Length: 238
Length: 394
Image (tube, rainbow over all chains, first blue to last red; front, side, top):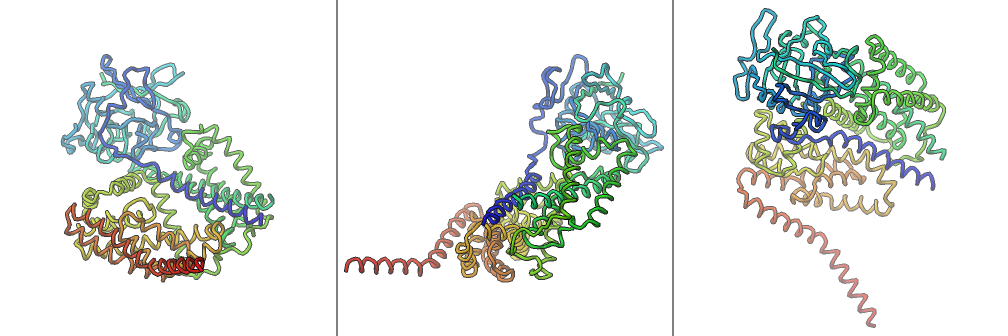
């Protein structure tokens, strides 16, 4: 009799756990991730920067600061994404995890007066320059630095990210507002020239990672450990 | 207590072994850059552990001892060894052995906001030790737990067994792709959101956005909504009528609804029947079985006709009874036909006002059918009451 009572309860627990695991996976419902309410991501002061307000536009010094956290996996494994929004389709596949819709990031760069390769509503066919190595992204060049608590300085992007071919990363403001809205991959910074990421690396042509020509990862010698908050600063290159 | 201990040992052993295999496989798949950029292989760990849970379930409650292969020393050691080798090969060479196993496990178990990698590593050490001990103990501790399992795996026909395995395989695959593929997940969530609005126009536009694949998507969504009971099927049936005409719309709605109903039936049969047999009294269960055998077709007819009644719940309920598959199949096929044709036709022709009137109409029909079925009983009850009063009066 007692055995039956136990089996009844345990059975129920097992069934509930199994269903719960299934439902938990499905419950991360995506509400329409479009261009509504992009202003919610902007911090009003630099001190306010955090997960809830991850973008700060410093108009006076002409900089955009983005709060992000380190993704430990890509200090070891290669990836083609530098910084992605966690809620985007490729949210977990970048060296740095961002917490704002990339369209808000696009708008922030526009507010600094920067010119993208393809603006909102613009002609995407004109965003690449043909070179012998392939298509490379156009748009205003950017200076990108990264820092974190205890870093002691602002690290240049080339100190914290590694390109297997040894080329220096040279980011440009690709723009790609419409493509980013349509695909919602969440991409802010791509390691090769890209038609979706808001900014991408002009030193590497389109498909460099995919074609196996180059590999990129975070620099484990410099970047702090998984989960550490960092501030990424974007400014027009002088 | 002893019984609980034995269950715990086997459950832990199974989960540990499947975890190890999932970890090895996911770390191996991560080595493919092409795959890693499109699919988050870490979720293989979760799906693998759920498979282990399923195997434990089948072994315990359906006497399916073939699934409890962690009990066998040779195969389990081989699997564990192979997984360990894979983990070491993929991590030590890259200097990621303190990062990757913890990262993958943490992600698969949805603990990214809760644990740091160092904390996860701590838990992994504990888990490894506990799992290994459980595995070794499981080789000695007998599994037979539930005496006279109600639904014996061996007594099922080969077709039912294959069907069940295929169904659960597909569910596992769907879960894996949903969790691991960002774009697929977004598309499914969007589909669910559109359906939940119960807005036929919006849903029709959503289907149209798929162009030539609209029929395929409609069929898949009908099956999907069968499992997720709160989502309304009538939206899909109306839209199919709108898009494909009443005849082809009906064909599509009928066949995809059948597929969905069969899925619910087997889900309930596998998970629910053993549970229900334990929880519900014999009398109640017999009553439910008899009720469905007699009134099943009517129940389906009503459930399918009236939009507010959940058709899926009836399919689940049927799976919980001991009604045979073919009886259920034909009852569902015929029972849902009138409603499917009507909704398809209305989808093609009717305006908004007519649709509202139609909903009210269906409720009236449903009540009439119920009344017709209950009439003999009510009359009988009335007679007995009358007799009782007469006797009391004497």
